[in-house]
Length: 262
Ligand SMILES: *[C@@H]1O[C@H](CO)[C@@H](O)[C@H](O)[C@H]1NC(C)=O
Ligand SMILES: *[C@@H]1O[C@H](CO)[C@@H](O)[C@H](O)[C@H]1NC(C)=O
Ligand SMILES: *[C@@H]1O[C@H](CO)[C@@H](O)[C@H](O)[C@H]1NC(C)=O
Image (cartoon, rainbow, N blue to C red; front, side, top):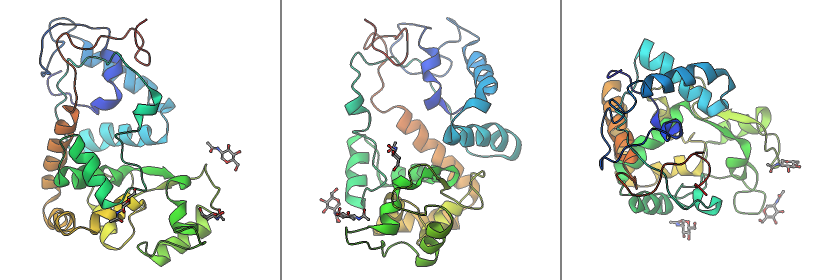
């Protein structure tokens, strides 16, 4: 299984029952205690792909098809992470930048996690396969400053199209929109091209063009080969994967991944 790499963030829960006391995240953490661990995860994912919600489905589809068949970013997922002993739903979103974030907010939230502006641009690149509910951005279409206005930073033709065909009202909270229309199943650079056309869907997407450092990095990615983006994206994913990780004897191994052990 050494060549098998996957979108780890979604699957770590499955590994919690296989404990160990070694103190570092490492590749092949389960190779002795549970040699089939990664195979089990892969099989589970394959079996449940059809039940996955839309975003996960898009990611998984991309992963198993684009990565393995047509190429895409790859990264290693060191294992051995443990679970926290405190779980508050109110904290779950605290460190996740809301889609309405401006550049200042994004920079601060990423910095809090030890992630820099390059990581911000690269990880935002995952929106190349993203989908979003209208409610995450429809304020930009209908009521940006509270006077029934549109976000001037959003391309007006694109906004008109979204209003006519996707998010027909401010209260639409069910329609799902592709974040990289036309190529949302493909992990490519077109998300970054859209940013330059002022077609980033979230305020947090368009914010990337409001700072000279992130804007120039966007341009640099667009000028480089796709493989360069894949490599850099993979590095940032690995870096994010190490944020606030518990290993060794800290935390616990949950019996049910959604709940602290009682
Ligand atoms: C960014 O948003 C925060 C509120 O979330 C606001 O206080 C701040 O003024 C905004 N910064 C800019 C540059 O607009
Ligand atoms: C637009 O936002 C303002 C201020 O938040 C609010 O009072 C108004 O009701 C909103 N308009 C609509 C159509 O929701
Ligand atoms: C979505 O909108 C409907 C009708 O406006 C409302 O009844 C429902 O509670 C909303 N759902 C969410 C998750 O906000």
